[in-house]
Image (cartoon, rainbow, N blue to C red; front, side):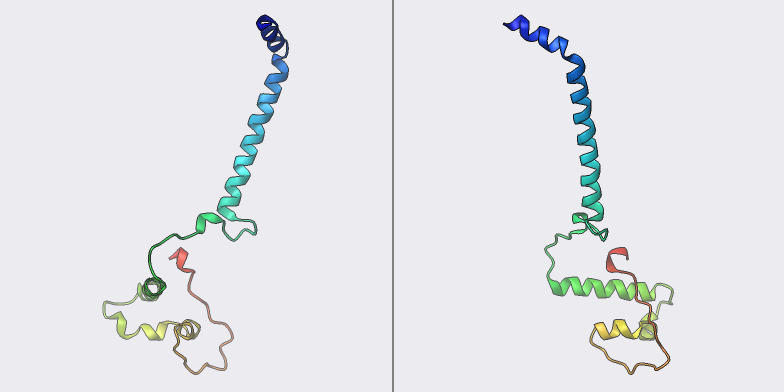
Length: 119
């Protein structure tokens, strides 16, 4: 009985090799698709790789976000840049922070700073 099993395995070696290669190929394709889904997500706007796990509170996150935006606006300015920062921050961002200014009539488009993830 034991010898018959080995004879059958030897006779079907080509078939088992084909099944093994097909399985390895299928696993490789699955891994690539799984990686694309993890990085880019279903709609292409980012997958689960962009999930942020933190112990910070919402207030601390907002403070850090504000500091990042402030540094994005003020990196070209001089050392006493805090005097002139409000001139360089656009109205839309100030409105997000709760500060309202009268809007100019001729301004149709305000460029927003990059997303916090890219700063």
